Image (cartoon, rainbow, N blue to C red; front, side, top):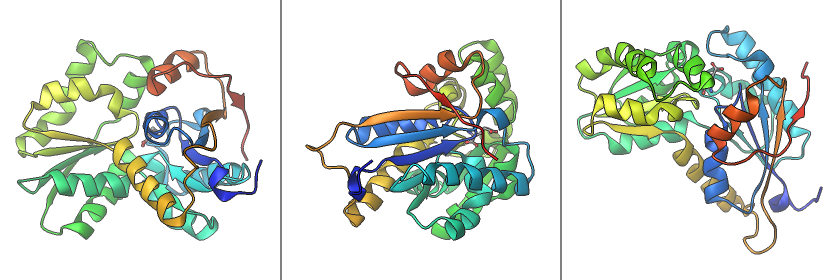
Length: 271
Ligand code: DGL
Protein backbone atom coordinates (compact mmCIF):
# COMPACT_ATOMS: atom_id res chain seq x y z
CA UNK A 1 0.00 0.00 0.00
CA UNK A 2 1.43 3.34 -0.98
CA UNK A 3 1.16 6.65 0.81
CA UNK A 4 0.46 8.67 -2.34
CA UNK A 5 -3.18 9.58 -1.93
CA UNK A 6 -3.88 9.36 -5.66
CA UNK A 7 -2.69 5.72 -5.77
CA UNK A 8 -4.97 4.63 -2.96
CA UNK A 9 -8.16 2.72 -3.71
CA UNK A 10 -11.72 4.02 -3.79
CA UNK A 11 -14.00 2.23 -1.32
CA UNK A 12 -17.50 1.29 -2.43
CA UNK A 13 -20.19 -0.43 -0.40
CA UNK A 14 -23.72 -1.70 -0.83
CA UNK A 15 -25.99 -3.97 1.15
CA UNK A 16 -25.27 -6.64 -1.46
CA UNK A 17 -24.37 -6.88 -5.09
CA UNK A 18 -26.42 -3.97 -6.46
CA UNK A 19 -23.50 -1.58 -5.91
CA UNK A 20 -21.58 -3.52 -8.55
CA UNK A 21 -23.65 -1.60 -11.12
CA UNK A 22 -21.80 1.49 -9.85
CA UNK A 23 -18.46 -0.36 -9.88
CA UNK A 24 -19.08 -1.35 -13.49
CA UNK A 25 -19.45 2.32 -14.42
CA UNK A 26 -16.42 3.24 -12.30
CA UNK A 27 -14.25 0.68 -14.10
CA UNK A 28 -15.43 2.00 -17.45
CA UNK A 29 -14.87 5.69 -16.68
CA UNK A 30 -11.92 5.60 -14.29
CA UNK A 31 -9.99 2.53 -15.48
CA UNK A 32 -6.82 3.46 -13.59
CA UNK A 33 -8.46 3.50 -10.20
CA UNK A 34 -8.17 0.67 -7.70
CA UNK A 35 -11.50 -0.22 -6.12
CA UNK A 36 -12.25 -2.04 -2.91
CA UNK A 37 -15.88 -3.20 -2.78
CA UNK A 38 -17.77 -4.43 0.23
CA UNK A 39 -21.16 -6.13 -0.18
CA UNK A 40 -22.96 -6.79 3.08
CA UNK A 41 -24.68 -9.88 1.74
CA UNK A 42 -25.11 -11.53 5.16
CA UNK A 43 -27.35 -8.68 6.31
CA UNK A 44 -29.18 -7.90 3.06
CA UNK A 45 -31.83 -6.58 2.50
CA UNK A 46 -31.41 -3.18 4.15
CA UNK A 47 -34.56 -1.83 2.54
CA UNK A 48 -36.93 -3.30 5.11
CA UNK A 49 -34.79 -2.56 8.21
CA UNK A 50 -35.09 0.24 10.74
CA UNK A 51 -33.28 3.53 10.29
CA UNK A 52 -31.05 2.88 13.34
CA UNK A 53 -30.05 -0.53 12.06
CA UNK A 54 -29.22 0.76 8.58
CA UNK A 55 -27.07 3.55 10.07
CA UNK A 56 -25.22 1.07 12.27
CA UNK A 57 -24.49 -1.27 9.34
CA UNK A 58 -23.42 1.64 7.15
CA UNK A 59 -20.97 2.84 9.82
CA UNK A 60 -19.49 -0.66 10.15
CA UNK A 61 -19.13 -1.01 6.37
CA UNK A 62 -17.42 2.38 6.17
CA UNK A 63 -15.08 1.54 9.04
CA UNK A 64 -14.02 -1.66 7.29
CA UNK A 65 -13.32 0.20 4.05
CA UNK A 66 -11.49 3.01 5.87
CA UNK A 67 -9.07 0.40 7.17
CA UNK A 68 -8.21 -0.42 3.56
CA UNK A 69 -6.66 3.08 3.32
CA UNK A 70 -9.18 4.35 0.79
CA UNK A 71 -8.99 7.92 -0.57
CA UNK A 72 -12.76 8.29 -1.03
CA UNK A 73 -15.90 6.41 -0.12
CA UNK A 74 -18.85 5.73 -2.41
CA UNK A 75 -22.10 4.79 -0.72
CA UNK A 76 -23.50 2.72 -3.60
CA UNK A 77 -26.64 1.85 -1.70
CA UNK A 78 -29.60 4.22 -1.86
CA UNK A 79 -31.05 2.75 1.30
CA UNK A 80 -27.87 3.48 3.29
CA UNK A 81 -27.49 6.88 1.68
CA UNK A 82 -31.09 7.84 2.41
CA UNK A 83 -30.59 7.69 6.18
CA UNK A 84 -26.90 7.50 7.08
CA UNK A 85 -25.07 10.34 5.34
CA UNK A 86 -24.99 12.71 8.36
CA UNK A 87 -23.63 9.91 10.58
CA UNK A 88 -21.04 8.87 7.99
CA UNK A 89 -19.90 12.46 7.38
CA UNK A 90 -19.55 12.96 11.14
CA UNK A 91 -17.58 9.76 11.73
CA UNK A 92 -15.38 9.49 8.65
CA UNK A 93 -13.14 12.30 7.56
CA UNK A 94 -12.70 11.54 3.89
CA UNK A 95 -14.62 12.53 0.76
CA UNK A 96 -17.92 10.64 0.71
CA UNK A 97 -20.05 10.45 -2.40
CA UNK A 98 -23.49 8.89 -2.36
CA UNK A 99 -25.84 7.86 -5.14
CA UNK A 100 -28.79 10.10 -4.22
CA UNK A 101 -27.40 13.62 -4.78
CA UNK A 102 -25.99 12.93 -8.28
CA UNK A 103 -29.12 11.03 -9.40
CA UNK A 104 -31.39 13.81 -8.10
CA UNK A 105 -29.31 16.42 -9.98
CA UNK A 106 -29.59 14.43 -13.21
CA UNK A 107 -33.37 14.11 -12.78
CA UNK A 108 -33.69 17.88 -12.29
CA UNK A 109 -31.64 18.48 -15.45
CA UNK A 110 -33.74 16.08 -17.50
CA UNK A 111 -37.33 16.91 -16.54
CA UNK A 112 -39.21 19.20 -18.92
CA UNK A 113 -42.56 18.98 -17.21
CA UNK A 114 -41.36 19.17 -13.61
CA UNK A 115 -42.84 15.77 -12.74
CA UNK A 116 -40.30 13.24 -11.49
CA UNK A 117 -40.97 9.66 -10.40
CA UNK A 118 -38.69 7.92 -7.89
CA UNK A 119 -38.68 4.21 -7.11
CA UNK A 120 -36.66 2.52 -4.38
CA UNK A 121 -36.79 0.28 -1.35
CA UNK A 122 -39.35 0.92 1.37
CA UNK A 123 -36.70 2.56 3.61
CA UNK A 124 -35.47 4.87 0.83
CA UNK A 125 -38.96 5.98 -0.16
CA UNK A 126 -40.09 6.48 3.45
CA UNK A 127 -37.00 8.59 4.20
CA UNK A 128 -38.04 11.11 1.49
CA UNK A 129 -34.33 11.66 0.80
CA UNK A 130 -34.94 12.02 -2.95
CA UNK A 131 -37.77 14.51 -2.41
CA UNK A 132 -35.42 16.63 -0.30
CA UNK A 133 -32.50 16.36 -2.72
CA UNK A 134 -34.69 17.29 -5.71
CA UNK A 135 -36.47 20.14 -3.88
CA UNK A 136 -33.16 21.61 -2.72
CA UNK A 137 -32.29 22.06 -6.40
CA UNK A 138 -35.72 22.97 -7.69
CA UNK A 139 -38.54 23.40 -5.16
CA UNK A 140 -41.30 23.48 -7.78
CA UNK A 141 -40.71 19.99 -9.14
CA UNK A 142 -43.40 17.49 -8.19
CA UNK A 143 -41.98 14.21 -6.93
CA UNK A 144 -44.05 11.01 -7.05
CA UNK A 145 -42.55 7.96 -5.44
CA UNK A 146 -43.23 4.28 -5.05
CA UNK A 147 -41.56 1.59 -2.97
CA UNK A 148 -40.94 -1.55 -5.03
CA UNK A 149 -39.85 -4.16 -2.45
CA UNK A 150 -40.18 -7.13 -4.83
CA UNK A 151 -37.68 -5.78 -7.35
CA UNK A 152 -34.61 -6.71 -5.27
CA UNK A 153 -35.49 -10.42 -4.89
CA UNK A 154 -36.50 -10.56 -8.56
CA UNK A 155 -33.12 -9.20 -9.60
CA UNK A 156 -31.23 -11.43 -7.16
CA UNK A 157 -33.08 -14.42 -8.62
CA UNK A 158 -32.19 -13.30 -12.14
CA UNK A 159 -35.84 -12.96 -13.21
CA UNK A 160 -35.37 -9.71 -15.06
CA UNK A 161 -36.53 -10.61 -18.56
CA UNK A 162 -39.70 -12.61 -18.18
CA UNK A 163 -43.40 -12.15 -17.51
CA UNK A 164 -43.03 -12.08 -13.72
CA UNK A 165 -40.79 -9.00 -14.03
CA UNK A 166 -43.21 -7.35 -16.48
CA UNK A 167 -46.24 -7.98 -14.21
CA UNK A 168 -44.44 -6.70 -11.10
CA UNK A 169 -43.25 -3.58 -12.92
CA UNK A 170 -46.78 -2.91 -14.15
CA UNK A 171 -48.23 -3.26 -10.66
CA UNK A 172 -45.72 -0.92 -9.00
CA UNK A 173 -45.33 1.67 -11.76
CA UNK A 174 -48.90 2.15 -12.99
CA UNK A 175 -49.71 4.80 -10.32
CA UNK A 176 -46.56 6.77 -11.23
CA UNK A 177 -47.29 6.67 -14.93
CA UNK A 178 -50.83 7.94 -14.22
CA UNK A 179 -49.15 11.01 -12.70
CA UNK A 180 -47.51 11.72 -16.06
CA UNK A 181 -43.94 11.75 -14.79
CA UNK A 182 -41.44 12.45 -17.56
CA UNK A 183 -38.36 11.28 -15.63
CA UNK A 184 -38.07 8.14 -13.52
CA UNK A 185 -35.20 7.73 -11.05
CA UNK A 186 -34.07 4.17 -10.33
CA UNK A 187 -33.43 4.86 -6.63
CA UNK A 188 -31.90 1.47 -5.86
CA UNK A 189 -28.67 0.09 -7.25
CA UNK A 190 -30.36 -3.23 -8.04
CA UNK A 191 -32.89 -1.70 -10.41
CA UNK A 192 -30.62 -1.01 -13.42
CA UNK A 193 -30.85 -4.75 -14.03
CA UNK A 194 -34.56 -4.19 -14.77
CA UNK A 195 -34.01 -1.05 -16.82
CA UNK A 196 -34.89 -2.60 -20.20
CA UNK A 197 -38.22 -3.95 -18.96
CA UNK A 198 -39.01 -0.74 -17.06
CA UNK A 199 -38.31 1.36 -20.17
CA UNK A 200 -40.55 -0.94 -22.19
CA UNK A 201 -43.37 -0.38 -19.71
CA UNK A 202 -43.03 3.40 -19.24
CA UNK A 203 -42.42 4.06 -22.95
CA UNK A 204 -39.88 6.30 -24.68
CA UNK A 205 -41.41 9.57 -23.37
CA UNK A 206 -40.09 8.83 -19.86
CA UNK A 207 -36.36 9.30 -19.33
CA UNK A 208 -34.82 6.86 -16.89
CA UNK A 209 -32.09 7.97 -14.48
CA UNK A 210 -29.72 5.27 -13.31
CA UNK A 211 -27.55 6.62 -10.48
CA UNK A 212 -24.35 4.85 -11.58
CA UNK A 213 -23.19 7.28 -14.27
CA UNK A 214 -24.02 10.56 -12.44
CA UNK A 215 -22.38 9.19 -9.28
CA UNK A 216 -19.16 8.24 -11.04
CA UNK A 217 -19.09 11.59 -12.82
CA UNK A 218 -19.45 13.42 -9.53
CA UNK A 219 -16.76 11.31 -7.87
CA UNK A 220 -14.45 12.09 -10.78
CA UNK A 221 -15.04 15.83 -10.25
CA UNK A 222 -14.37 15.53 -6.51
CA UNK A 223 -11.13 13.58 -7.01
CA UNK A 224 -10.05 15.92 -9.79
CA UNK A 225 -10.61 19.03 -7.63
CA UNK A 226 -8.52 17.51 -4.86
CA UNK A 227 -5.79 16.36 -7.24
CA UNK A 228 -6.43 12.79 -6.13
CA UNK A 229 -7.31 11.07 -9.43
CA UNK A 230 -5.07 8.08 -10.18
CA UNK A 231 -2.43 9.05 -12.73
CA UNK A 232 -3.61 7.89 -16.15
CA UNK A 233 -0.17 6.62 -17.17
CA UNK A 234 1.04 5.44 -13.77
CA UNK A 235 -1.03 2.58 -12.45
CA UNK A 236 -3.22 -0.27 -13.54
CA UNK A 237 -6.70 -0.21 -12.03
CA UNK A 238 -8.04 -3.14 -10.07
CA UNK A 239 -10.99 -4.49 -8.15
CA UNK A 240 -10.95 -6.30 -4.85
CA UNK A 241 -14.27 -7.63 -3.57
CA UNK A 242 -15.15 -8.38 0.04
CA UNK A 243 -18.50 -9.77 1.18
CA UNK A 244 -19.95 -10.63 4.58
CA UNK A 245 -21.25 -13.96 3.29
CA UNK A 246 -20.74 -16.08 0.24
CA UNK A 247 -24.14 -17.33 -0.91
CA UNK A 248 -24.60 -20.07 -3.49
CA UNK A 249 -25.60 -17.93 -6.43
CA UNK A 250 -23.07 -15.19 -5.73
CA UNK A 251 -20.78 -15.57 -8.76
CA UNK A 252 -23.63 -15.95 -11.25
CA UNK A 253 -25.47 -12.86 -10.02
CA UNK A 254 -22.34 -10.81 -9.30
CA UNK A 255 -20.99 -11.28 -12.80
CA UNK A 256 -24.30 -10.17 -14.25
CA UNK A 257 -24.19 -6.95 -12.18
CA UNK A 258 -20.54 -6.33 -12.94
CA UNK A 259 -20.69 -7.27 -16.61
CA UNK A 260 -17.42 -9.21 -16.38
CA UNK A 261 -15.80 -12.23 -14.75
CA UNK A 262 -15.15 -11.87 -11.03
CA UNK A 263 -11.85 -12.53 -9.34
CA UNK A 264 -11.97 -14.55 -6.12
CA UNK A 265 -13.81 -12.68 -3.36
CA UNK A 266 -12.93 -12.61 0.33
CA UNK A 267 -15.39 -13.11 3.17
CA UNK A 268 -15.20 -10.84 6.23
CA UNK A 269 -17.52 -10.75 9.21
CA UNK A 270 -18.26 -7.27 10.51
CA UNK A 271 -19.33 -6.39 14.03
N1 DGL B 1 -29.04 -1.92 -3.33
C1 DGL B 1 -29.84 -1.37 -2.26
C2 DGL B 1 -30.21 0.09 -2.58
O1 DGL B 1 -29.64 0.72 -3.45
C3 DGL B 1 -31.11 -2.13 -1.99
C4 DGL B 1 -31.04 -3.53 -1.50
C5 DGL B 1 -31.50 -3.71 -0.07
O2 DGL B 1 -32.69 -3.61 0.26
O3 DGL B 1 -30.62 -3.99 0.72
O4 DGL B 1 -31.07 0.64 -1.95
